Image (cartoon, rainbow, N blue to C red):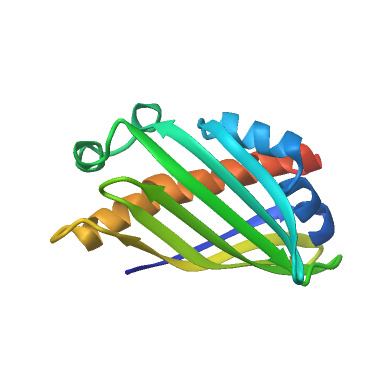
Length: 169
């Protein structure tokens, strides 16, 4: 298990605006194109205390600038499930969960909490979680590579598209 922290500024906006954009169909299409992935399914549902977005997609590992060590182990096409749940969202903050799972062998699983918070007039997005991979003997090294080269990159793409949709920089 590899610990992971991702903390970035979004810009001057509200948590309710951020979540509304993150679960919008237009954002999801643009986010999928930015990564780039083929979107197989996307659905938003109301859950007990908020909203859950499930995105199922496939991507070609050749589309990413990945280290050779990852390319040797991953198949050329990877299926990925992205499940993000937001609860207790108001103008100044929001909490949630993020789970990302790849299918096949090897597989990687990222899970953790997400938090939106207004700090000095600027909304921040934070993810605290971990990456687990099923690569015997190379698990920690491979997990660190997955975190740095895939999960961080996808979260950066999400943030880039989010800022565009919100009109903030």
